[in-house]
Length: 426
Image 1 (cartoon, helix red, strand yellow):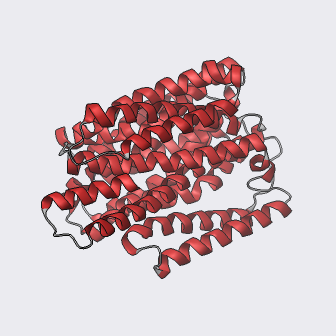
Image 2 (image 1 turned 90 degrees about the vertical axis):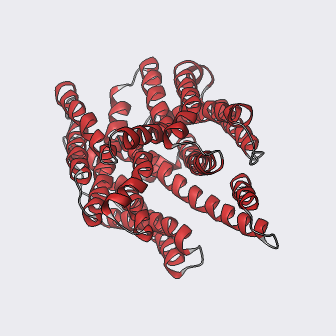
């Protein structure tokens, strides 16, 4: 649900805007409200699972996500919808690390762990593309409101399964809660996500954008200082300072930036240049989804136990980079079969080789007491990487379009060529 909601609502935005009559300027807040609360609360809520029990936080997150999605789907005003999206993000921040930490603590035998994390990596990598397709289908054949109602359909059986199958384990000695660290990291992540969200509409040099990013980075630095001195830190630094684990977090951050970039620019290219419908655009991403699933399940169940993560992650990055090089050659008249499909297959396989081994390694060897916050760090890296990458690449694309149009007469063909030039440069 959490991964789907990062993209499924995007497809429904034009229909929701027409129905609720909100402005173009307000439209971005439907996406930003979710990202702000989700990104800023991940570490805090990840630690909640360690302190109060992961089954409990998972069930609360599922129930909250479902109820709030129903409220958002029934919204009759912009205010109700954007508020629901903000609370959806908060519920997602409780749900996502709880689910991953439950995998970490439940599947400890290498073979079972490989299969479980292969499936999780496939969902993490492919969920965004599936969200695009699902959003298109629901919007076109039902209503934009079903892009939110669908979460209720998923949440109900998930809650019943969690209540029936999971046990709630709470530490016998609950450590004191790190309030200063929680405040510093939550505010820091909030300002960083907010700054990146404002980079596109306001520009990188805008006081609000730049100020948010600078203060956010300062607060994260303060958070590190607090954690070094805290008796019971929110995020024990030993988790991120481990070489393999730290490399895995970095891999998730970088691949998240690349994945968000592909979704952003290729969606625009397919819809605006090739004139694909939202549903057809979603279908166009399915080959990449298939390869992410193949790469994730194969790498974790077969390759990771034999070779370890060191050869897999660089190989995946090389494959994904080669696929992006192919996409960088696109033109106004490029075909899907000849140009886009080969690139998507390579990118999908590459991301599959990255996500599952990296997520597995990032949570391998952590104690049960730290599983929640270690899992939340994975989710945070993917979110911050995705938002920062999309914002940075969008700036590059905008600059490239402006440079291409300089001194040229603006015709429909030149405008289309300029847009494609921006996509390929980014």
